[in-house]
Each structure stands twice: as structure tokens, then as C-alpha cells.
Length: 223
Length: 223
Image (cartoon, rainbow over all chains, first blue to last red; front, top):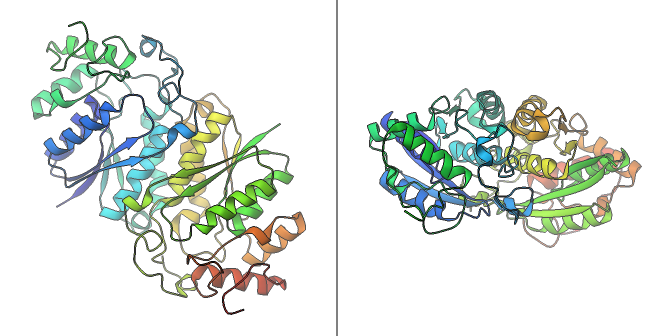
């Protein structure tokens, strides 16, 4: 059985991406990262999504990204509401986050003899992060195949970004079509029990469900 | 003052590399990694080297590489003596280790506005690791500049490998010439108080000092 690593953030995009991988027949190994984020709830949800998708193994890696500093998601800088919808790199950008996550995924792919790494990045409706663009993933894949024993032995590792060209609404529709556990996903940047409804991630999510014409199955404050 | 990130393993190559960066006028930020290695002593020595080089800040990152498994350096697989001198990828290979270390360095470079990342990799007298080759570092640098805010804003980050073409003997001579604190370096893969003298790393080190015609300043067992 072909194996793949799936990065699970607990959010919509990675949940649907993992479901796409599963439907393609891969046996999944999932990775989540504790990067001193404020919204630890996403780690709990990632674990529930992994269970729902019956992955072979789910690992949570402590990355200590907060030690390095430099982001509103890990520092004590406030997250300004609405900044996701502006077209600049926002304060929620975590330096080199995807590079660190993919580096771990690469190590895990090597250890598990996985052929692919699935990551739910999207360059449409995105938050302006440089490490969510197709040219970045292409460059990572090239580097990855020079970095590893499997790569130099000719067993090329592929970085798979099946939702990269999809809008949030299209991702939600795809998730429903495949039976992805969207009710288990979590997007909110704040650390509350319910989603706040006005941070960058909530705004993008709500806009997506609205455009998809489907009610969001999770709970929001003041709703 | 120009800033640079230096990866410090506690070993000879990274110590001399950091000294080269310092002599080039960079203000240094150093990073060491706890990757569940057996030879934690190298982390103590890395800190001493950082102090000796008067770096601006030294961070130790817990990477949890052991959770992924797959290497004699992090697992309980024994390290067979002498395997470094064979021309195959040895059991001490840690999957994607340099990619993970450089990913953290990239994040730290972004946070500190550093221009360069110095890594003491060498492809001469090396242990057969795919992620120590010049083509790998070139590919990482290309990816890094697509991954980061600084990169896409035109402040290119350079991956600097000043000792990559040098033999161990040449690195040792360079270190002496620049006044690098070679007496603080640690190479042995075993976890003892004194170096074992017969693991891969000790054999390469001893060969280097012998060829350089200089006595090794550290203590060995049975000496």
C-alpha cells in the first residue's frame, strides 16, 4: 500500500487535503505541530480528524517556534481583525513555518518510506504568506530530493498540494463531496471554546461557507 | 553590523565555520539542536563555543527528531565503529536533519534580519550524508528565498558553507590560524566523559589532526 505523510493543522484545508489523499488510496501518517500557537485547540481537532480518517499513526511535534519570536501567532503581539483580506504579508505570518513543517514531514517520509507529502496550502483566498505559493513548493520538492537517501536513490518524494488552486468555497464543497469531517475542523486564531467569528481565519472560513451556500457546522460566539 | 545565523553542533567543522563568519565581520546568532542525540555533551560544548565567540544570542532548540525514529544516533540501534570510512550512507544518517536545522535557521534569519546562514558542512572526508553536498545547499538557498518575506522582498538569504571543500586537516589548520576554540569542540558519537576514539566521528577527527600534524587538544579514553 502506498504511504503518504499528511500535515494536519486542524483546519479545513488540511482536513480536505488528507481526505483527498485517503481517497487516492494512500495509507496516511499524519503530523501536527505545536509551535507555541495561541490556538492550541487546533491540535486537539487535528487529532480527532486523524482518528476520523483512520490514519496509521498521528504524531504531534513540539517545534519551539516561539523561542525564535517574530509572529503575532506565537508572540504577545495582538492579531488585528481583518488583516487577512488585505493583500500584504500580515503579522500572523510565522517565519519559515511551512519550511519547518515540511522538513519534519520529509524526515518522516524517509523513515516511513512514504512517496508523497500532502499539505493543504492554498494560494487563492490566502493570507499573503510567501510559503503558500506553488513556486515555493516546487523548490522545496527539488531540494527534498537532493536532501534524502530515498531521493538520491531515485525514489522521488512528491510535495502534493491538491487544493492550492481552489477557493475556500471550492475546498468546502470538495470536502462535503468526499465526506471529510468538516465538523471537526477549527480555524479561529483566538484560543476560545467557540470560534470568535472576526479574526482573519474566521472571516476567510465564513466567507467560504457563505460562497459555498452551506452552513458552517461549528459553533461561533454570539450565535 | 551585518548579522548571520551560525549552526553550532559543538564539533570542529561548525566551530571553525562560525569563526570564519566572525572574522568576516558578522554579528553572530547561534543555534544548536537537541535532536534526542546520544551525545548530548556536544550541546554543552556548543554553548561554550558560543560564549567563546561572543555571539549576540545562543538558542538551543528541542527538535523531537527521536519521535520520528530511523537513525542510530537517535534510536537504540548500535553505532558500528568504522562505518564512516566506507562510501555508503551509514546508520548514523539522521533523515532530513540538515533540512530541519536549516529551516529553523531560516526562521531565525528572518526574525533577526540576518543576511547569511553559516553551516559547517563538508563534502570531503564526510560520512556519506546526502544533505552535506553543495547541490543540496544550493537548492535549499533557492527554496529559502521563495519561502520568506525577506527573500521575496529582495533581501536574499545566503547559505554559506565555507569549509565544504576542505579536508578535516585543512579545517583544523584554518581553525588554528583564526584562533578558533578547538579545545572546546566535541565530535564523539558516544556519550562518555572522554571521547571514545573509535566511533566514526572520532576516527575522522583523529585522522584530521594526524594529517594536520597537530595534537588533538581534547581527552580520549585509554590515553
